[in-house]
Image (tube, rainbow, N blue to C red; front, side):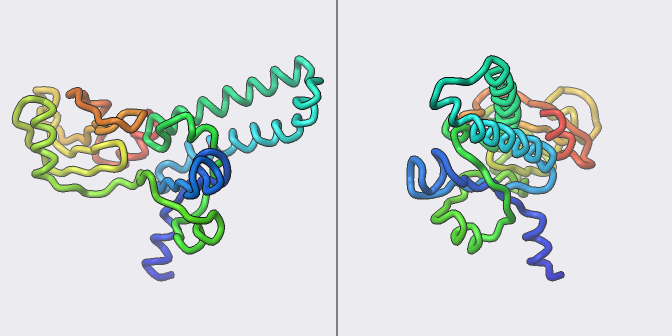
Length: 217
């Protein structure tokens, strides 16, 4: 297997299949969200909840139109709605989604293969990239120093569409301690707006910190 093929198999997308954010929804361009394997458990739970909810709606469509749904059917439907929005909001808190329009969209899972996505879903654009990548250290130090109102020095900076992952000593943000940690700091809120408050969401050991972050969020 080539390095390019291996990279494709480790890079995943949620693609808007139909609904508001699809190529046949509010616009003519399907929204695409890119992420890596670390998010697989949470995405799996969300997609299962989505299928259960959509399946229930399909089988109940006639009774909904005719207004003949029974009480137990409504209870089941409400339970599936609650489960769906629970997982939707968890993904929103991590940075996958930013609005109610994302919730009114049906999402498919696929690999990051642009040609396949365009052939299958039509014109598309990548709206969020949840992959964690290195980012400029000195620019990040300046940004954090402005936000905290004091001189911030770090070892390394990484980021994705919503979060900064700052590698630094514990003393940098907590005022004491020499241990090296990875600090999760949101640079966007759940609605996709800039975060300005000097606030650390949590911190992690340097090993497997993304998986720790996803499990905790």
